Length: 120
Image (cartoon, rainbow, N blue to C red; front, top):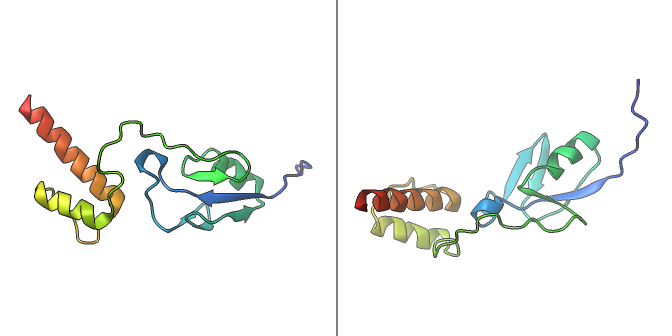
């Protein structure tokens, strides 16, 4: 039995991780579809549309902008990758040379949280 419901195409874009200052790769492949960060892609598959509507890292055109979910901001979020590497070196936080901003933020924050627990 075929589904006679018609679903119009929607435009969707990858915005990154709203819980980490919208960090993420410049392109991503999800559910068999390629997305360039910040660029709208037209999607016609109703199943894919439903999945992307429920995914925090994607914005559907006309449904409002994705809002950042990390309310506990620190001075690290606005820094670029090179500045974060300098902070990591200064605070003796280990990281790989090819690290991303998101990974480095997580590592620095985890090291600081661990240091704070040890101070108690």
